[in-house]
Image (cartoon, rainbow, N blue to C red; front, side):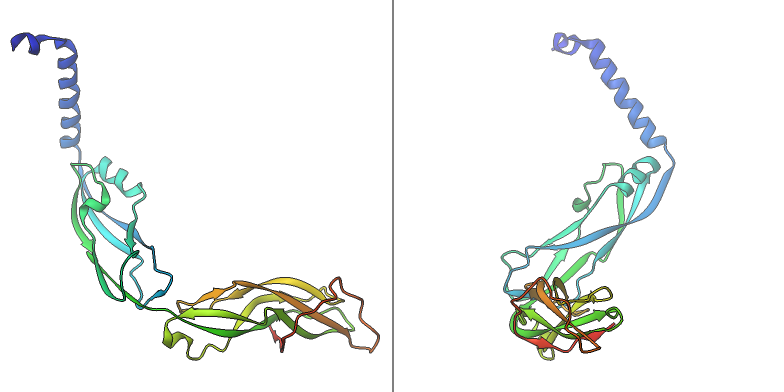
Length: 237
């Protein structure tokens, strides 16, 4: 037994000295208490469901320990992920525990707020909504926007039943017509209604912006000849 202890004793003694030095360094440090914010991410939301409540987007964690270690933890990326895959319609609770933080042994959690997160899953409903344009600017002098058509003229929108009740159309991002002198086709991204859990399918459409002369002379021919049906009155921004 004694031989095993004495084997490589210089290295063992050095390891012990290093361990004691580190312990003394940590114990002897000035202590600090700091609050860090941990983002909350939702993952695995089933395709046929929608979030029925507003989920907290971050958690405040109060930490206490040696100053250098606490600062290291404060700058280390920490995320609380709420995995929703496989869950059913209804209310679900997620606990936030110190183990989520992967802290050094000398750093303690003083407080977690909130320490429990609630997620409500609801059935996702689907309907059709027409696409409408938002126009930015005006064509050059002697030209004007005659109409804007889309392909497809309507898209699929999905979300909570109460969110879809009054959703008859969706708007495009602003379409800049300030330099157009002829009919032009562009890809137009669509804007989900703010404050709702709405999904748009597709999220962009082809927009044909038809330009005509104010003076009565024919407009310059555009690069596209096949124009989709579904005219819409543009909104000017």
